[in-house]
Length: 104
Image (cartoon, rainbow, N blue to C red; front, side, top):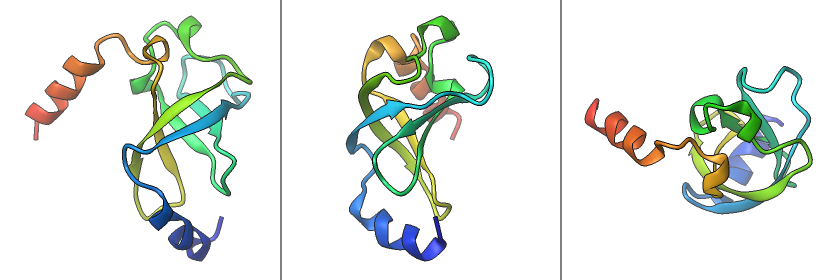
C-alpha cells in the first residue's frame, strides 16, 4: 500500500474500533511473532505475540473469523490489532496494561 493510499484510509479508522477479520496462514511457526489478519481492507492487520496467550495452542487458527480491536496505528501502513475474544487474549491483559501505563 502506498503512503498516499494509507493517508486516505487512516482517517476512516479509529483506535478502539472493532473490525471483523480472518486469521491468515502464518509464514512461521505459532508462538514466534504473532498473527496476520485479513480485514478486507487494502492493508493487513497484525496481532503482536505480546497480546496473545502465552500458550500458542490457544491462538486463533488460520481461517478463524473473529472480532479485533484497533490497538495501534501510525504513519506506516499497518494496523496493529487486539483480539476482542478473551480466549485469544493474554490471560493477564488488564494487569499487563496497568504495568505498561505505570512505566510511563
